[in-house]
Length: 70
Image 1: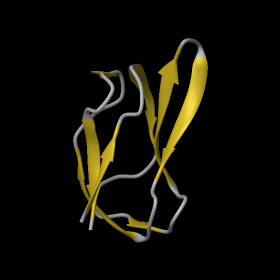
Image 2 (image 1 turned 60 degrees about the horizontal axis):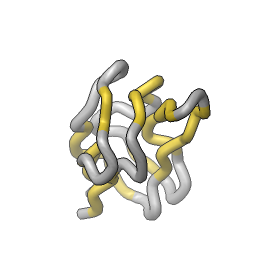
Image 3 (image 1 turned 135 degrees about the vertical axis):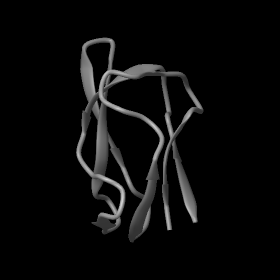
């Protein structure tokens, strides 16, 4: 199990993968917007997106849980 955490403060601009989706290493799970930049949040390894902890429009802080890949 691998947790995906926010690397910086931002707003969830777009959710790309839904729970249950099969992911390869480097796949985009969601896109954060921070300081007018769009930052893709990607997986480090392959697996299934077991849980998504945020929705589009949510404000996240550095270190917040975004999702879990099993």
